[in-house]
Amino acid sequence: MSLPTHVKIVEVGPRDGLQNEQQTIPAAIKIALVDMLTGAGFSNIEAASFVSPKWVPQMATSTEVMAQIARRDGVLYSALTPNMQGFEAALLARADEVVIFGSASEAFSQKNINCSIAESLERFRPVAAAAKLNGLRLRGSISCTLGCPYQGEVALDSVADVVSRMRELGCDEIDIADTIGVGTPHRVQAVMQRAAQEFPLAQLSGHFHDTYGQALANIYASLEVGIAIFHASVAGLGGCPYAKGATGNIATEDVLYLMQGLGITTGIDLHAVVDAGQFISQHLGRKAVSRAGNAIAAARAG
Ligand SMILES: CC(C)(COP(=O)([O-])OP(=O)([O-])OC[C@H]1O[C@@H](n2cnc3c(N)ncnc32)[C@H](O)[C@@H]1OP(=O)([O-])[O-])[C@@H](O)C(=O)NCCC(=O)NCCSC(=O)C[C@@](C)(O)CC(=O)[O-]
Image (cartoon, rainbow, N blue to C red; front, side, top):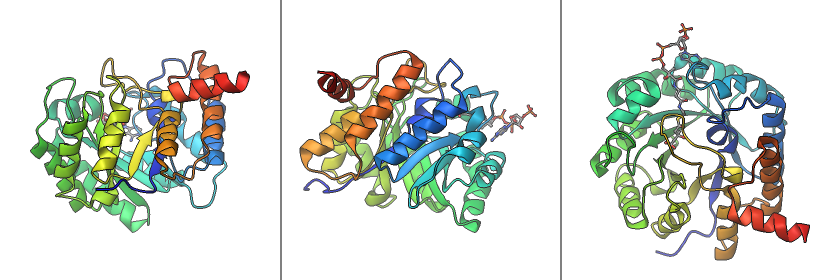
């Protein structure tokens, strides 16, 4: 199969990237980051998460962030919504897309959202119905599709089962997430191809953490089987609060550099993303976790 000629990159840094930061990040910094990313040309930015602030304190500013970002027409600003309480907050905050997030692993489901996979899908049912009723886009995210920090291997059929249940709920897009970054290319292709038996390939996305340094290879492997939506996090920010040792998503700058080299269009200005990455890294007081981003910044500095 030839590679796609255009891919959509969903920028998840403001949510997945920042949710696990131990230092409290002021809303103004998050807003400035989202605005820089909007300016860089993303069509979809995951900007907020309406979860319990007791579970994920960093996301407690989500309402403020969504109220003050400078929205651009045509850009989807997404928010995580684990239940109806989260959905109501996301609706008030004018999220364009809500994300229900489940898991292909029972153990991770319990740790992350405090219920079984079956219970989570029941919780998502009214959220999905309300999203449709209110004309919001609905995305489903499935954690641990390539391995689980608690139970180890995850069967292809377990992934396929959740994909199929999320399709029944009416998801417009479904994320195949490698929460702990353990996947390698052939397994990724097998998971993508199995998921595509349950849901249109064109609406599946790859959400790869880079813990074992495999994310770019996994993106290339996904391109080879026709996946054309990828999640990435500016400066490689992130980690999951319920997956110890997991590092951030693949850095957006690295993905954009790869796409540029492959002649695949994204509509995103790599240099503007490097600026956003340097901005947030400076605020956090550490170097960006992006090879391409740091190389470009160094080359610019001469
Ligand atoms: C799902 C719950 C809420 C269940 O948590 P629970 O304790 O089972 O829920 P509950 O319904 O019993 O409520 C307990 C308390 O939480 C409050 N509450 C309940 N819901 C909300 C809400 N929406 N917003 C604000 N507050 C909420 C509720 O009001 C109550 O407050 P209290 O009466 O004790 O004061 C909890 O487990 C939770 O918030 N978990 C967050 C998990 C999370 O955010 N994880 C990280 C995101 S997922 C991720 O990163 C993976 C992904 C997507 O990136 C893909 C990948 O890489 O794998």
